[in-house]
Length: 318
Ligand SMILES: NC(=O)c1ccc[n+]([C@@H]2O[C@H](COP(=O)([O-])OP(=O)(O)OC[C@H]3O[C@@H](n4cnc5c(N)ncnc54)[C@H](OP(=O)(O)O)[C@@H]3O)[C@@H](O)[C@H]2O)c1
View: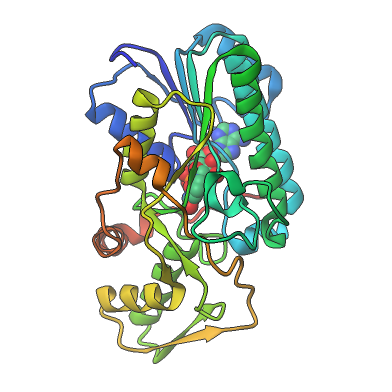
């Protein structure tokens, strides 16, 4: 990518997209095309086709999607399936039609089969039954990855995907019921602390293990892949380190200074028991994450304490 190439970052106001924009700006890219959902609804096929016809971007980073935590995924399976199929098909196919040189699509580690061997290698995709709580989202994402792969094969175009683990960062969605695990934990534990509550109830049994990647590290990996990676097979992106939800919750409580008890409410679903990515391929290419979980959590907590009232609390109305 040259510094003056036209790069469309779809979903630039989101957790991942905003980190990608920051990374590209830091690297001196100033010809970015950024559209809010009001300016360009990516579900609208005609609008997306007209956009590509007029703008003709050179590169596309597709970080727009309907994304949510376990409750949102479970409750709105049809919407997660339909909206993501539409967004990604419109963007990927029109990028193909209108001469985009390279496109990077974002999958997600939660779309691997529920009972995968660990750590999860790229070739395990589609090797078993999906986690039922996010089946709609997973089916859509797998279709997006396959569309890129088939365009790569059939038209010899650099349409590739990466498979990030759970991402967290300052521009996360802190909605108490619709957020991912880290912003959800920060929001709940912080609220209990402010209200002087002796205990706080958290979802699930706390024993499932997860891997967490700071959004700036993911943006760095995306930039690396756009610059240097040209193969067809998608790449896992993560830290290679796992931790139980209970341990993360205690780390957050410690960083916030909350002294009350953390109670795990086992009546809530837990999701996949373990989800650790195998990073052999990405590490062999020379990329590794830089920000530790403790450092990243510290940044997000500082942000939330300072800007709590202005943090994102988004909920999509369907
Ligand atoms: N967060 C994670 O833990 C994680 C992990 C692995 C992979 N990923 C992948 O990373 C990508 C970005 O996720 P994220 O966490 O950054 O999500 P996010 O914070 O919710 O951001 C999603 C972005 O997509 C935009 N968008 C949604 N529907 C749209 C539509 N119809 N038209 C135009 N824009 C639309 C949103 O626009 P508005 O600003 O208007 O809402 C928002 O900017 C997704 O593909 C996701 O699967 C995320």
